[in-house]
Image 1 (cartoon, one colour):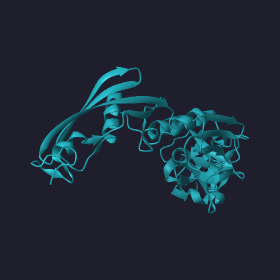
Image 2 (cartoon, rainbow, N blue to C red):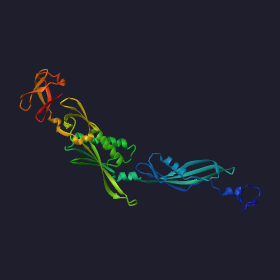
Image 3 (cartoon, helix red, strand yellow):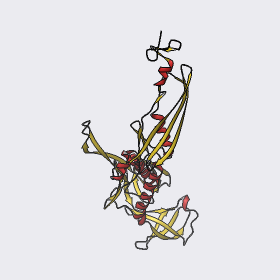
Image 4 (cartoon, rainbow, N blue to C red):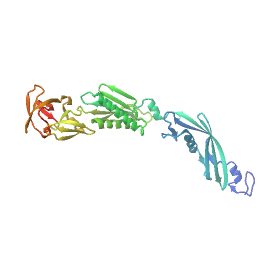
Length: 347
Protein backbone atom coordinates (compact mmCIF):
# COMPACT_ATOMS: atom_id res chain seq x y z
CA UNK A 1 0.00 0.00 0.00
CA UNK A 2 1.30 3.45 -0.84
CA UNK A 3 0.34 6.99 0.14
CA UNK A 4 -1.89 8.54 -2.54
CA UNK A 5 -0.42 11.96 -1.83
CA UNK A 6 3.37 11.40 -1.61
CA UNK A 7 3.71 7.80 -2.90
CA UNK A 8 5.55 6.55 0.21
CA UNK A 9 5.31 2.85 0.91
CA UNK A 10 7.39 2.54 4.11
CA UNK A 11 5.41 4.75 6.51
CA UNK A 12 2.50 4.17 8.82
CA UNK A 13 -0.74 4.60 6.90
CA UNK A 14 -3.82 6.48 8.11
CA UNK A 15 -6.46 5.40 5.67
CA UNK A 16 -5.08 6.03 2.16
CA UNK A 17 -2.36 8.49 3.21
CA UNK A 18 0.78 8.19 5.29
CA UNK A 19 1.03 9.60 8.78
CA UNK A 20 3.28 12.48 7.67
CA UNK A 21 0.77 13.67 5.09
CA UNK A 22 -2.04 13.17 7.60
CA UNK A 23 -0.35 15.25 10.31
CA UNK A 24 0.67 17.98 7.84
CA UNK A 25 -2.91 19.33 7.76
CA UNK A 26 -3.99 18.04 11.16
CA UNK A 27 -5.10 20.51 13.85
CA UNK A 28 -5.18 19.39 17.45
CA UNK A 29 -7.69 22.05 18.46
CA UNK A 30 -10.31 24.28 16.90
CA UNK A 31 -10.84 27.81 18.25
CA UNK A 32 -12.40 30.89 16.61
CA UNK A 33 -10.05 33.70 15.65
CA UNK A 34 -12.44 36.24 17.19
CA UNK A 35 -14.39 35.75 20.43
CA UNK A 36 -16.86 38.22 21.91
CA UNK A 37 -17.63 38.32 25.65
CA UNK A 38 -20.58 40.35 26.99
CA UNK A 39 -20.11 41.97 30.41
CA UNK A 40 -22.66 44.10 32.28
CA UNK A 41 -21.22 47.59 32.70
CA UNK A 42 -23.16 48.05 35.98
CA UNK A 43 -22.66 44.84 37.99
CA UNK A 44 -19.81 43.17 36.01
CA UNK A 45 -21.81 39.94 35.57
CA UNK A 46 -21.03 38.13 32.33
CA UNK A 47 -22.97 36.22 29.70
CA UNK A 48 -21.80 32.61 29.45
CA UNK A 49 -23.53 30.04 27.27
CA UNK A 50 -26.69 32.11 27.16
CA UNK A 51 -26.87 32.66 30.95
CA UNK A 52 -25.79 35.64 33.02
CA UNK A 53 -23.27 34.70 35.71
CA UNK A 54 -23.39 37.11 38.63
CA UNK A 55 -20.23 36.23 40.57
CA UNK A 56 -17.54 38.88 40.19
CA UNK A 57 -14.22 37.81 38.65
CA UNK A 58 -11.38 39.97 37.25
CA UNK A 59 -11.45 40.89 33.56
CA UNK A 60 -8.27 38.87 32.89
CA UNK A 61 -9.94 35.74 34.29
CA UNK A 62 -13.01 36.40 32.12
CA UNK A 63 -10.77 36.40 29.03
CA UNK A 64 -9.07 33.12 30.00
CA UNK A 65 -12.46 31.47 30.64
CA UNK A 66 -13.72 32.67 27.26
CA UNK A 67 -10.72 31.02 25.57
CA UNK A 68 -11.24 27.77 27.49
CA UNK A 69 -14.94 27.60 26.60
CA UNK A 70 -14.23 27.98 22.89
CA UNK A 71 -11.49 25.35 22.57
CA UNK A 72 -12.49 22.05 20.90
CA UNK A 73 -9.89 19.29 21.15
CA UNK A 74 -9.73 16.63 18.43
CA UNK A 75 -10.55 13.15 19.72
CA UNK A 76 -7.25 11.77 18.36
CA UNK A 77 -5.15 14.01 20.61
CA UNK A 78 -3.60 12.45 23.72
CA UNK A 79 -1.61 13.88 26.64
CA UNK A 80 -2.44 17.39 25.57
CA UNK A 81 -1.13 20.45 27.41
CA UNK A 82 -2.71 23.80 26.61
CA UNK A 83 -1.17 27.16 27.56
CA UNK A 84 -3.14 30.41 27.37
CA UNK A 85 -1.51 33.83 27.29
CA UNK A 86 -2.78 37.38 26.92
CA UNK A 87 -0.18 38.91 24.61
CA UNK A 88 -1.52 42.45 24.43
CA UNK A 89 -4.53 44.52 25.53
CA UNK A 90 -5.79 47.23 23.19
CA UNK A 91 -8.74 48.94 24.81
CA UNK A 92 -11.42 46.29 25.08
CA UNK A 93 -9.61 43.82 22.79
CA UNK A 94 -7.21 41.19 24.10
CA UNK A 95 -4.78 39.63 21.62
CA UNK A 96 -4.09 36.13 22.92
CA UNK A 97 -1.89 33.14 22.18
CA UNK A 98 -3.16 29.58 22.56
CA UNK A 99 -0.32 27.04 22.53
CA UNK A 100 -0.99 23.30 22.42
CA UNK A 101 1.37 20.36 22.90
CA UNK A 102 0.11 16.80 22.48
CA UNK A 103 0.46 13.41 20.82
CA UNK A 104 -1.36 12.00 17.82
CA UNK A 105 -0.72 8.34 16.91
CA UNK A 106 2.39 8.51 19.15
CA UNK A 107 3.82 11.56 17.37
CA UNK A 108 4.48 14.69 19.45
CA UNK A 109 2.98 17.86 17.99
CA UNK A 110 2.73 21.50 18.93
CA UNK A 111 0.71 24.31 17.43
CA UNK A 112 -0.08 27.95 18.16
CA UNK A 113 -3.25 29.95 17.50
CA UNK A 114 -3.71 33.72 17.54
CA UNK A 115 -7.07 34.64 19.06
CA UNK A 116 -8.71 38.01 19.63
CA UNK A 117 -11.11 38.35 22.60
CA UNK A 118 -13.32 41.44 22.56
CA UNK A 119 -15.04 42.66 25.76
CA UNK A 120 -18.48 44.03 24.92
CA UNK A 121 -19.98 46.29 27.60
CA UNK A 122 -23.73 45.89 27.82
CA UNK A 123 -26.47 45.82 30.46
CA UNK A 124 -27.73 42.56 31.94
CA UNK A 125 -31.52 42.03 32.24
CA UNK A 126 -31.50 42.57 36.01
CA UNK A 127 -29.62 45.88 35.85
CA UNK A 128 -31.86 46.93 32.98
CA UNK A 129 -34.85 46.40 35.27
CA UNK A 130 -33.18 48.36 38.06
CA UNK A 131 -32.33 51.26 35.74
CA UNK A 132 -35.94 51.45 34.56
CA UNK A 133 -37.37 51.45 38.11
CA UNK A 134 -38.90 48.00 37.66
CA UNK A 135 -40.78 46.54 40.61
CA UNK A 136 -42.70 43.33 41.27
CA UNK A 137 -44.40 44.21 44.55
CA UNK A 138 -45.75 47.12 46.57
CA UNK A 139 -45.71 46.83 50.36
CA UNK A 140 -48.51 48.95 51.83
CA UNK A 141 -47.95 50.00 55.45
CA UNK A 142 -51.32 50.79 57.01
CA UNK A 143 -53.07 50.98 60.40
CA UNK A 144 -56.65 50.07 61.35
CA UNK A 145 -58.89 53.09 62.12
CA UNK A 146 -56.07 55.42 63.18
CA UNK A 147 -53.22 57.50 61.83
CA UNK A 148 -49.75 56.03 61.85
CA UNK A 149 -47.40 57.90 64.15
CA UNK A 150 -44.20 59.61 63.01
CA UNK A 151 -42.04 57.25 65.08
CA UNK A 152 -43.84 54.24 63.53
CA UNK A 153 -43.02 55.51 60.05
CA UNK A 154 -39.40 56.02 61.11
CA UNK A 155 -39.22 52.48 62.48
CA UNK A 156 -40.86 51.09 59.31
CA UNK A 157 -38.27 52.92 57.15
CA UNK A 158 -35.47 51.42 59.22
CA UNK A 159 -36.93 47.93 58.88
CA UNK A 160 -37.26 48.31 55.10
CA UNK A 161 -33.69 49.62 54.74
CA UNK A 162 -32.27 46.90 57.00
CA UNK A 163 -34.13 44.17 55.11
CA UNK A 164 -32.94 45.47 51.74
CA UNK A 165 -29.32 45.57 52.93
CA UNK A 166 -29.56 41.93 53.96
CA UNK A 167 -31.57 40.68 50.98
CA UNK A 168 -29.40 42.32 48.30
CA UNK A 169 -26.72 39.72 49.08
CA UNK A 170 -29.00 37.02 47.64
CA UNK A 171 -31.43 39.04 45.51
CA UNK A 172 -30.19 41.68 43.05
CA UNK A 173 -33.71 43.10 42.82
CA UNK A 174 -33.78 43.85 46.56
CA UNK A 175 -34.13 47.60 46.12
CA UNK A 176 -36.79 50.26 46.60
CA UNK A 177 -37.10 52.66 43.64
CA UNK A 178 -39.93 54.64 45.19
CA UNK A 179 -41.75 55.36 48.46
CA UNK A 180 -45.21 56.85 48.04
CA UNK A 181 -46.16 58.82 51.17
CA UNK A 182 -49.94 58.81 51.22
CA UNK A 183 -52.36 60.10 53.83
CA UNK A 184 -53.37 56.56 54.78
CA UNK A 185 -49.80 55.22 54.93
CA UNK A 186 -46.59 54.53 53.01
CA UNK A 187 -46.31 52.42 49.86
CA UNK A 188 -42.88 50.82 49.40
CA UNK A 189 -42.21 49.79 45.79
CA UNK A 190 -39.91 46.76 45.91
CA UNK A 191 -37.94 45.27 43.01
CA UNK A 192 -38.70 41.61 43.71
CA UNK A 193 -41.74 39.84 45.13
CA UNK A 194 -39.52 37.66 47.33
CA UNK A 195 -38.00 40.67 49.07
CA UNK A 196 -41.36 42.43 49.25
CA UNK A 197 -42.76 39.49 51.21
CA UNK A 198 -39.71 39.49 53.47
CA UNK A 199 -40.20 43.18 54.25
CA UNK A 200 -43.88 42.61 55.07
CA UNK A 201 -42.97 39.77 57.43
CA UNK A 202 -40.35 41.93 59.19
CA UNK A 203 -42.86 44.77 59.59
CA UNK A 204 -45.32 42.30 61.07
CA UNK A 205 -42.60 41.03 63.41
CA UNK A 206 -42.19 44.55 64.79
CA UNK A 207 -45.74 45.91 64.74
CA UNK A 208 -48.00 42.85 64.59
CA UNK A 209 -50.92 42.97 62.22
CA UNK A 210 -52.38 41.12 59.26
CA UNK A 211 -50.76 40.56 55.84
CA UNK A 212 -52.86 40.27 52.70
CA UNK A 213 -51.78 39.96 49.06
CA UNK A 214 -53.63 41.31 46.02
CA UNK A 215 -52.30 40.50 42.53
CA UNK A 216 -52.99 43.05 39.79
CA UNK A 217 -52.76 42.32 36.08
CA UNK A 218 -50.46 44.85 34.41
CA UNK A 219 -49.87 43.38 30.94
CA UNK A 220 -49.59 40.18 28.95
CA UNK A 221 -46.50 38.26 27.89
CA UNK A 222 -46.73 38.34 24.08
CA UNK A 223 -44.61 35.20 23.68
CA UNK A 224 -46.64 33.02 26.05
CA UNK A 225 -49.98 34.81 26.24
CA UNK A 226 -49.84 34.63 30.05
CA UNK A 227 -50.75 37.56 32.22
CA UNK A 228 -48.01 39.55 33.99
CA UNK A 229 -48.91 40.55 37.53
CA UNK A 230 -47.64 42.82 40.26
CA UNK A 231 -48.43 41.95 43.86
CA UNK A 232 -49.73 44.50 46.36
CA UNK A 233 -48.84 43.30 49.88
CA UNK A 234 -50.81 45.01 52.63
CA UNK A 235 -49.50 44.94 56.20
CA UNK A 236 -52.22 46.42 58.40
CA UNK A 237 -51.13 47.06 61.98
CA UNK A 238 -53.70 47.04 64.81
CA UNK A 239 -55.76 50.02 65.87
CA UNK A 240 -54.57 49.47 69.44
CA UNK A 241 -51.01 50.07 70.65
CA UNK A 242 -48.89 49.05 73.62
CA UNK A 243 -50.44 50.53 76.75
CA UNK A 244 -53.96 50.67 75.29
CA UNK A 245 -56.96 48.84 76.72
CA UNK A 246 -58.84 46.26 74.67
CA UNK A 247 -61.81 43.98 75.19
CA UNK A 248 -61.49 40.33 74.22
CA UNK A 249 -63.51 37.32 75.33
CA UNK A 250 -65.40 39.49 77.85
CA UNK A 251 -62.10 40.56 79.47
CA UNK A 252 -60.62 44.05 79.63
CA UNK A 253 -56.91 43.76 78.93
CA UNK A 254 -54.10 46.30 78.96
CA UNK A 255 -51.73 45.61 76.08
CA UNK A 256 -48.12 45.01 77.14
CA UNK A 257 -46.68 43.79 73.84
CA UNK A 258 -47.68 43.24 70.22
CA UNK A 259 -45.58 40.56 68.55
CA UNK A 260 -45.67 38.90 65.13
CA UNK A 261 -48.65 36.65 65.82
CA UNK A 262 -49.79 37.45 69.34
CA UNK A 263 -50.98 40.22 71.64
CA UNK A 264 -49.72 40.00 75.22
CA UNK A 265 -51.45 41.84 78.06
CA UNK A 266 -52.91 41.75 81.56
CA UNK A 267 -56.51 41.35 82.59
CA UNK A 268 -57.00 44.56 84.60
CA UNK A 269 -59.60 42.87 86.86
CA UNK A 270 -57.51 39.83 87.81
CA UNK A 271 -54.00 41.05 86.81
CA UNK A 272 -53.51 37.69 85.04
CA UNK A 273 -51.44 37.52 81.88
CA UNK A 274 -53.38 37.08 78.64
CA UNK A 275 -52.15 35.91 75.21
CA UNK A 276 -54.40 36.65 72.22
CA UNK A 277 -53.62 35.25 68.74
CA UNK A 278 -53.53 38.09 66.21
CA UNK A 279 -55.53 35.95 63.82
CA UNK A 280 -58.47 36.79 66.13
CA UNK A 281 -57.97 40.51 65.62
CA UNK A 282 -61.57 40.95 64.44
CA UNK A 283 -62.74 39.85 67.90
CA UNK A 284 -60.59 42.49 69.63
CA UNK A 285 -62.21 45.84 70.47
CA UNK A 286 -60.28 48.97 71.46
CA UNK A 287 -61.79 50.38 74.66
CA UNK A 288 -59.41 53.10 75.82
CA UNK A 289 -56.11 54.58 74.72
CA UNK A 290 -53.03 54.75 76.93
CA UNK A 291 -53.35 58.54 76.91
CA UNK A 292 -56.65 58.14 78.80
CA UNK A 293 -54.81 56.90 81.87
CA UNK A 294 -55.16 59.36 84.77
CA UNK A 295 -53.28 59.90 88.00
CA UNK A 296 -54.85 60.34 91.44
CA UNK A 297 -53.90 60.28 95.13
CA UNK A 298 -54.45 57.55 97.72
CA UNK A 299 -56.28 59.01 100.72
CA UNK A 300 -56.90 55.88 102.77
CA UNK A 301 -55.76 52.25 102.94
CA UNK A 302 -57.22 49.32 104.89
CA UNK A 303 -56.73 45.55 104.52
CA UNK A 304 -59.78 45.38 102.25
CA UNK A 305 -60.22 48.88 100.81
CA UNK A 306 -58.01 51.39 99.03
CA UNK A 307 -59.60 54.84 98.88
CA UNK A 308 -58.68 57.36 96.18
CA UNK A 309 -59.84 60.70 94.86
CA UNK A 310 -61.86 60.61 91.66
CA UNK A 311 -59.89 63.02 89.38
CA UNK A 312 -63.16 64.08 87.73
CA UNK A 313 -64.81 65.63 90.79
CA UNK A 314 -62.34 64.86 93.64
CA UNK A 315 -64.89 62.71 95.45
CA UNK A 316 -63.69 59.78 97.54
CA UNK A 317 -63.98 56.38 95.87
CA UNK A 318 -63.56 53.03 97.64
CA UNK A 319 -61.97 50.24 95.62
CA UNK A 320 -61.13 46.66 96.47
CA UNK A 321 -57.61 46.23 97.84
CA UNK A 322 -55.46 43.85 95.79
CA UNK A 323 -52.08 42.28 96.44
CA UNK A 324 -50.35 44.35 93.75
CA UNK A 325 -51.13 47.56 95.69
CA UNK A 326 -49.68 46.40 99.03
CA UNK A 327 -46.56 48.53 98.63
CA UNK A 328 -48.50 51.78 98.24
CA UNK A 329 -48.98 54.26 101.11
CA UNK A 330 -51.42 57.05 101.89
CA UNK A 331 -50.49 60.12 99.87
CA UNK A 332 -48.89 58.16 97.02
CA UNK A 333 -49.96 58.84 93.47
CA UNK A 334 -51.50 55.94 91.59
CA UNK A 335 -52.68 55.49 88.00
CA UNK A 336 -56.22 54.63 86.99
CA UNK A 337 -58.40 54.15 83.93
CA UNK A 338 -62.12 54.82 83.73
CA UNK A 339 -64.11 52.38 81.62
CA UNK A 340 -67.91 52.64 81.49
CA UNK A 341 -67.91 54.77 84.68
CA UNK A 342 -65.96 52.14 86.58
CA UNK A 343 -62.47 52.97 87.91
CA UNK A 344 -59.67 50.43 87.55
CA UNK A 345 -56.37 51.00 89.31
CA UNK A 346 -53.28 50.36 87.23
CA UNK A 347 -50.13 49.14 88.92
